[in-house]
Image 1: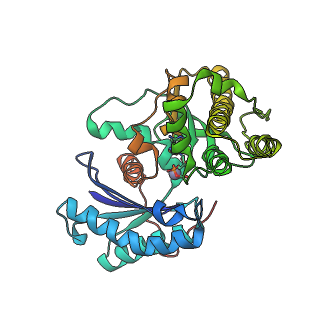
Image 2 (image 1 turned 90 degrees about the vertical axis):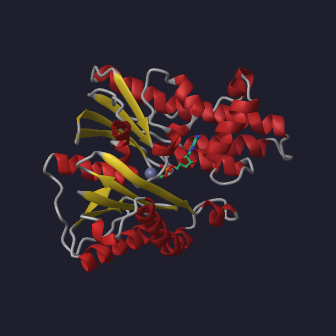
Length: 331
Ligand code: KG4
Ligand code: ZN
């Protein structure tokens, strides 16, 4: 069975083809809208929707072409229907439904966070061993910061999430205050890795929010950075900006690691897994050396993880066709 997977939850038009019988990824295409968003310093939802209208058909076409396949070779369509930018999701859902309808094939909808959650299993398509269950899994992206206890494949429990900003959003907004281009997460990571010192990481003490249970909060940290920069009066020089970036990155990562460690202790789980865009962060990987981080290309948004998720459901006999009135949902 060949599954064509689509993800348009944010600002990347993604299409992938997954072969369930052979447990093989046939193609995996990502068309990023980052160039169109740069001048706005963030994702403009309306522009993302329009970019998907242009980018998604190209991504699907390319995914088919790379696999030397025709649309009629696809047996099942699977699309992310939540959570994300509603206009962006609607483009993906409508497109997948139209394709499935015209080809008289079933389609199903998947949850973007669940796809990130099981993206560590993408290594199995390369014949590698995945991290063994149970996991304490952190999904950290531009839109989400969620902690899970994962008992087994598709068997998990939500432990907590962010009360305000997501960790990636905190990176991006703090980067914007520092005049870094969007998306600032990777820029802060690279800048601090190449030029930052231990001194820079400790120069400013930014708050690590004290939140209940397994919840997170980053809005106070963002405000603390803004206050610090405002206090400086004139525009800080590069050395000071670098210290602010390094100290803020440290505060974000410490807040995440504190909850991950707490959950690992309480549930007596050894294996920690981190996925989503922020899992690309090199300092994060350095600070949590025993955790499993998927390959960088599997951490940021992609449709391979959507195809894999559908494959996991199919293997358990739980991949069900969705009705034609299935729609998208921001949450
Ligand atoms: O998972 P993703 O591609 O899209 C969402 O579902 O949101 O995550 C994108 C987020 C952005 O906020 C971006 O700044 C952040 O992940 N990100 C990083 C790094 N690479 C991407 N944050 C910190 N360090 C990185 N290396
Ligand atoms: Zn994502």
